[in-house]
Length: 187
Length: 182
Image 1 (cartoon, each protein chain N blue to C red):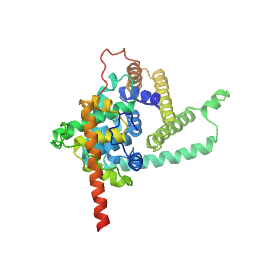
Image 2 (cartoon, each protein chain N blue to C red):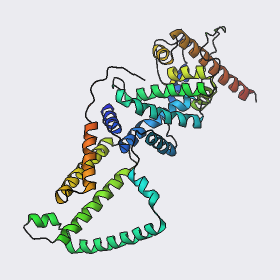
Image 3 (cartoon, rainbow over the protein chains, first blue to last red):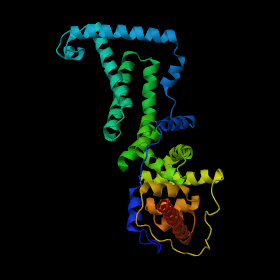
Image 4 (cartoon, rainbow over the protein chains, first blue to last red):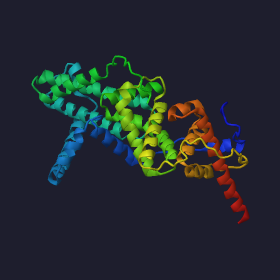
């Protein structure tokens, strides 16, 4: 109720009916994609690299990728059985000499877990725990940056690692608070 | 809530698509319902308006000073986009903002009203009546706020509300009589 209601105030039944009207309604699921596409087209969101890649995929490429994936999975199982719960980092810290192959397997497994976790995050339908999602995304970016720095140590001329570091630098600069604007635009 | 919106908005400004999707999912259901009601329940119009609202909001996000909640700010943009869309499509009817000279006879308040009937009746109102009624009786805006948003006088807002309520009571009262006689 408002103090400034006109003289013909709503009856209790009318007020109840107005209060019972829904305040939220889920828009069609396609609208989110349409909106994201529109924002990309206007340059407010980047065009995802995966979308560009997807267009290049051909049938034979997909068959090959599936075969490679299966081979990777089989070798992962074998290596996993061999190493058990140990990992290369634990072995290193314990003073045991580990082979390059063991380290490579460890990098592969850790990388797969990293990507799998991010895939889960991207597919998560539950939007209630926003803080955890934001935290997960920030952690993922930190790991990405730390990994790129290590790759640069290994291969200083690696263009991809360099590009990742530059991109992350640019991102952190963009996220610094902007100087206060003088114009007040409410809407 | 506001802090989360702000964090997400900062990330959207940095081009983070996931952050945008979070922000969208938090606010789109509220915005969609609001504009759907504004346009009289026409889904296609509501979808276009929601899309344009997010585009405008993203363009202006850097200038938003967080003095109001993000949801209120977004709704205000949605309202403007909805009005502009209705005007552009020639759907606004000439009962928009006239100083109505009809005799101010009251329609008796209804003692029973189903929300579903009310929703239908709101959808059938002329655009001008519907806008004020939705803002005042559904969204809880005060006449001063409505007048400021819509660029009309407080008196016009009150007058539009009076006639909107009367139109709804008349329509629903008549419908009820017809059902009783049938």
